[in-house]
Image (cartoon, rainbow, N blue to C red; front, side, top):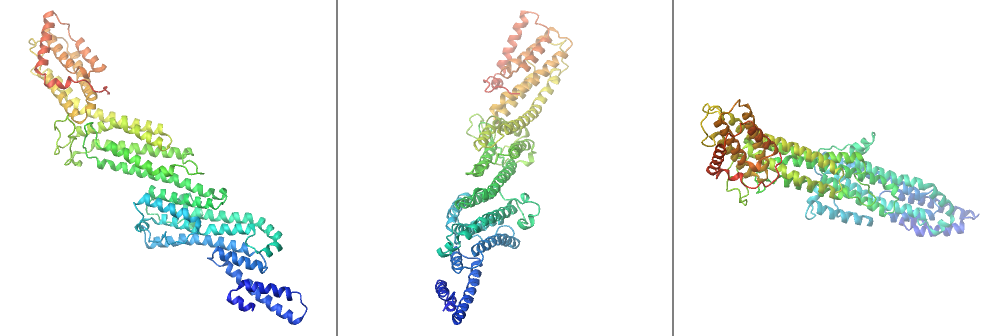
Amino acid sequence: NIKRNIQKGDYDVVINDYEKAKSLFGKTEVQVFKKYYAEVEAGIEDLRELLLKKLLETPSTLHDQKRYIRYLSDLHAPGDPAWQCIGAQHKWTLKLMQDCKEGHMKSLKGHPGLHSPMLDLDNDVRPSVLGHLSQTASLKRGSSFQSGRDDTWRYKTPHRVAFVEKLTKLVLSQLPNFWKLWISYVNGSLFSETAEKSGQSERSKNVRQRQNDFKKMIQEVMHSLVKLIRGALLPLSLREGDGRQYGGWEVQAELSGQWLAHVIQTIRLTYESLTALEIPNDMLQIIQDLILDLRIRCIMVTLQHTAEEIKRLAEKEDWVVDNEGLTSLPCQFEQSIVHSLQSLKGVVDCKPGEASVFQQPKTQEEVCQLCINIMQVFIYCLEQLSTKPDADIDTTHLSVDVSSPDLFGSIHEDFSLTSEQRLLIVLSNCCYLERHTFLNIAEHFEKHNFQGIEKITQVSMASLKELDQRLFENYIELKADPIVGSLEPGIYAGYFDWKDCLPPAGVRNYLKEALVNIIAVHAEVFTISKELVPRVLARVVEAVSEELSRLMQCVSSFSRNGALQARLEICALRDTVAIYLTSESRSSFKQALEALPQLASGADKKSLEELLNKFKSSMHLQLTCFQAASPAVMKT
């Protein structure tokens, strides 16, 4: 009967029959019964071996494991089958993890690039502890990468990301039952009541001895999980000697910040699921360390990628100027940074139990430097644009915002920009960046809890101001030098001599031409940016007044007529550009006048006044641009 029931798998019946046989014939001295009982014991020994073999088979369900352990307990199997089962399950889990890596690497060699559909997230049979993970991961994926989750998503997943997903799922499919098996081992629920009573003291002793061993098993699984993920995503963080077992991935391209953020979310959910099993935190700390390293890496990669994106912004400059003298470039720059910071919000923000990514000074410094680099890359873009050869610029689509009432259609769609106009546009953008964009970006960094914002702002502002000043000096040189250079030849045209000249009939042509050229500069600047007019005109006037002063001081002597002519021209220029005078230009005009003899009589003063009025009246229309109120403080 016992053999027949063993073959049928009716182990409960077998155990019951065995107990009866044992009570009836266990201590008999009758030979026939002894022989019968010996056969029973031999059959039971075979059953013990069979049950132990089934117990140690993998894969196996927790239900079957508990059943076989209870049978072996009832059959008083020697040793500690429950602990043997825990050990076998531990080795099986480690093997599955290593096989997972090797399977993905083989797949990668067969299909480089994106992986084949090995992630079937919907058809897995998951333990209940995975419910939270699968649901949240699905939601996160849908919102992060596509408007709705469709089957094409898994085809686009990079191999290493797919590996981490499968690996974490695998661990979470094994550990809950492994942990529950241990808990049942500890509290004795694995064993039958009779077996528990008979071997309680022995079992308690076993549990005490096994606690450290089990802790080492959990730690080994955690270490293997973390090292396999590090080997795939952070190979340089592996210790020497671990590379062969845990690394070896052929990395063709760096994972994007977006994918790293997705992986971080996956591992965070894995950590939450393991915490839900009530595994002690000290055993899971290694996962927190991994999450921190991945968060830091994600920030670095995202900021580096942002710098690359911003480097390409120069290609998007369309030179379309709005009525404030700006192109879309400053706005595009700010939006790129805002988008980058928003994508990092979930990575920078700490989940319960997580450390700040900025806790280490080294990380703070590296992130700060990357942020500075982003700002300086954009400044370099501006410099490139300001010096770009005309042939490299597509102006077929060029226009100025026609909503501006001040432009009078002076720039049309078929207009080609000159190098000076490009300089002005970049200068205008620089001014806006200094007053608005860079300050806005500092606020965005602060809002997202970045460190070293003051340093980022200071260094960036210094670089921007240095570029601004350089471009400004270049523009002034282009515009002021020709005007300054025309003064001396103009003054002495026709062999003019200050010591021997006719009574003045009015302001001479050289000065009128100089003023017309200054007006042309005004028009060019005004067309691009009204804000820049005072700054540019003030510097041009400084250059012209300085040259005029130098020329006056070089004259050895003036006749009465010469002195009156010189005073007329100096005063005409000074009065015309009065709203753009600075302390430097006022000083130059003063020095120029001091180089002249004083007016000899009241008649000369009256003549000077009449000639000045005549000049202002005759050139009233041309000089209108110098009569408007100065809209901004003159910054030179």
